[in-house]
Length: 151
Image (cartoon, rainbow, N blue to C red; front, side, top):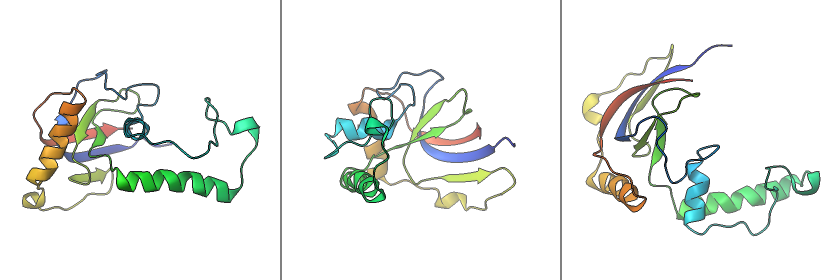
C-alpha cells in the first residue's frame, strides 16, 4: 500500500491545525453542514442516526437514486461557494478554505504542466469566498497557496 503525496495550488485562506470551524465534528463534513444551513431535508429517510439503513433493510436501487438525486438537485440550486483543501495529512488535517475549481493538483508521479498567468480568480470569486467566511465568523486575507498533502 502506497502513500499519496500531492502538490496543490489554491486560492483561499489558510487555518491552523485543530481550528474549530462551524462544521467541525467527527467527519468535518462541510457539504452536509451547508445543506442544513440552507434548509435542505430529504423527503424521506434511508439512514438511521448511526448511518445504517433504517431497520437494517437495504432499499431498492431506485429509492437510493431518488434519495441522492434530491441532494444533487439541492446542491445545484445552492452551491457551496468554497472548497476545503487539506494542506497537511489525512491524520492531521489543516485546511485552506478555497475558491472552488481554481488552482492545480499534482499527484506523486504525475507532474502537471500549467501556465502561472492562467491562475486567476475573479473579483466575484474573491467576494464569494470572503463573504462566506465573514458570514460564518472566519477571518483572514485570501492568498495563493502552494501546499502539499500527505495522505
